[in-house]
Image (cartoon, rainbow, N blue to C red; front, top):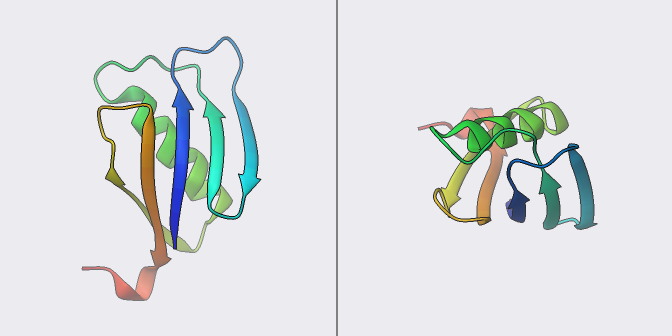
Length: 76
């Protein structure tokens, strides 16, 4: 499953807003430096989908990202 995300890094308060099954708005406290915001984003989604593999597939250096949530059985 592919999920589109709009991330706000360096926010005062973390916030997760589910727009639809495939769209989220997320604010994280970590800055967009040294991959810290992306790491926090993956941590959040790995808690939401604990039995799944979660990876960023598009938008590593942009606020708009696409992540893939897949079964762990299908890991490369």
